[in-house]
Image 1 (cartoon, rainbow, N blue to C red):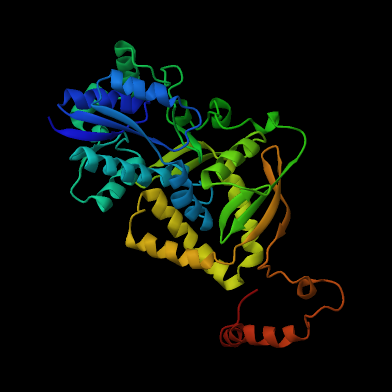
Image 2: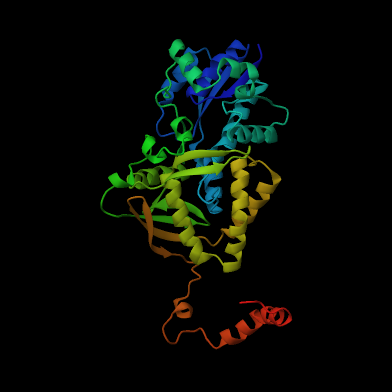
Length: 404
């Protein structure tokens, strides 16, 4: 029998797909990539895959790799898709493909299956990453298969299938929105969230923290240290990358940090509504930005900021393993060399305040910036500076006066 690897979450889609692939004649190797999913029973997920007849089922721990090699480089870019989305799902997909292909090589599988739909972004992220790493791999995307769609035209049919087969899944006909989780965030979409008049934040059962309204009435301070743009400790305690994310998820989660409800533009061309929660990463973005503000030269940070949306778009669309992104990541590693120091943040009811920031590479000079008399800045110098800067405007104004 032909064999394939399946990126398996144990959720509704991949549970149904496991059965369908077996019906199609495949030996299926299920790979659950442990990305620090906070709300999942991994032992039960493996047990379910084996009970359904998977040839093999395994967990691959990739939490540290996700944070160290994928999330933190994107954090260094301050990359946000469409100015809001912190790319928690987008970052994880190329890593899942990488691990699935490593297993495929080990077991001799010639195909790689995933549960992404033909409407979404994840199909792009899974496939573009897989083909960059293994150009000849066969991609099986059941949602793009007409026979699969005729059998399962929507999530309701899949829920009925699981109920008939006594396959336990979290989705239900009464509350059919789907979720994807890892240690970086949980995303929620589909079902009732497709109605833009529904309050998404109220409709979702969040899994990583409390609501701002339920958060403590006192501000909690947290101190985060960075070395060359990479977070290395929390409150003076050195931690691994995943340890930092795990710690801040707990700290920021109990203060309602990191919830958003957005309508975004998918790579395939449609608009999509998503609700996200990302306590730790939201906190790290704020801390990292505070250190950058005092350690990076104006022209350099402005150049980086012009490129950051390009990086966010590439990550969102699935172009992780590309020469272009390799080059951009190399550029930003150089940019981040001086981004070292400590930031103290105040967490309070969904808000983040910067309480203090220090760095051995601090470019902020109070003696230059002071608004008081004296200081080392000679204000007379501004006269010549502005005469030179304004020269093109004066010339243009004489040639073609502006109406005003």
